[in-house]
Amino acid sequence: MLRTEGLEKQFVLHLRGGLRLPVLAHVDLHVAAGECVALVGPSGAGKSTLLRALYGNYHADAGRILVRHEGALVDIAAAAPRTVVRVRADTLGYVSQFLRVVPRVPALDIVADAARGVSREQAREMAAALLLRLHIPARMHALPPATFSGGEQQRVNLARGFIGGHPVLLLDEPTASLDAARADIVVDMIAEAKQNGAAIVGIFHDVAVRDRVADRLHHVTPLQDAA
Amino acid sequence: MADETLLSARGLSLSFGAIPALVGVDADLWPGEVLAVVGESGSGKTTLLNVLSGRMAPHSGVTWYRDPEGVLHDVHAMPMPALRALHRSDWGFVHQNPRDSLRMGVTAGGNVGERLMAQGMRHYGRIRAEAIDWLRQVEIDADRVDHLPRTFSGGMLQRLQIARTLVTHPRLVFMDEPTGGLDVSVQARLLDLIRGLVARLDIAVVLVTHDLAVARLLAHRIMVMQRGVVVETGLTDQVLDDPQHPYTQLLVSSVLQA
Image: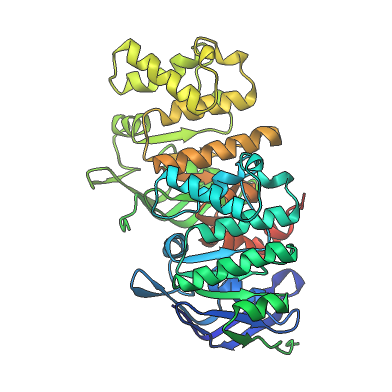
């Protein structure tokens, strides 16, 4: 479902005299349908950078990021921006650590808007059910999440990420702000997504969570900084 | 996927005296897509909007518009009446200052209904009903339909301008700093409104803004301009989170974090 070939990424800081920070080199990652691969490595090794590159949020300098989208392989690293928009809408889901939304939109609409291939009514019903499952009580559904706690915002984000049932799912610390009971729910949701054939790549700070969801580990090793 | 562009510009150049406002600008817009044009004051972004919409002619370059029948029109070679007809029907223009497009001596309902009448609608009851429906869609109370715009707040005026623009169901809307000059609370409401309407009505938008947060929340793609040159273009979140060009890096790093 998802494969990278020779992926490379460096940051060039033009405001720091063109300082070059190589982060990723020769990344060859392969994730099959129904499989969860956890990215592991020390802090600063480039796990989040890799995940963001897979989503097209970061620019890949070399290599390919192949995603199976509507039966064909699309190279996220080379695709036209509007193609990436389509791949994200239908194939490639992403749960970021932080919620970034239009300030006034209610939590329910934020989640319902991410549903795929269902009517508006069905989307709202699915969104409500998913929020309730993640222990966001009904009285909060009509509120914009700006005033929610960090853990509540993360759960809104999770509901938004899982509602679409995307065939490829990227998870950046999905349980970071959650207590054990809430994290268990997320573990169950990941297991269900795998059963439904999703290919998942995730960063899981919590080793217990990681061991329960991951089929394989992919090691991300820090590169030496170039002068 | 619609592969044919709605609007395509190639090699647009324009100078004001010795000052280059546009230097070889290419731009493409596909149906239903929101394209943000960002840059500092004087970067040429508003000039680009005026040229793309045919309100200004470039010194060189061409802009093509594809009509609903698939016929291409050279925006800068169109006869004035045809261009005006386009602006009254298929296209819309939302100005930063709503007073630039609203008629301040005509009621709110009249301002919205006028665009319908310009398209040939004559049935007064239907025009009024449509106007009231659009006031509701932009969250203006129906009982304000007979009030003059000068009794409206800045945020209401902007929403009225949007209702007036969208009532004819345009396929393409040009927006010049639509949230500029408004209080932040009013801005959030307007952003939410624009986002919802654009998605629901499948409108293509060229959005000029200096506010990168507005671009992030509304636009699929972004173009960064500096001194008339497009220095970077791409997916909105990629350009803002991983800018490649020195000027974009400067712009992004200069934003205050609230």
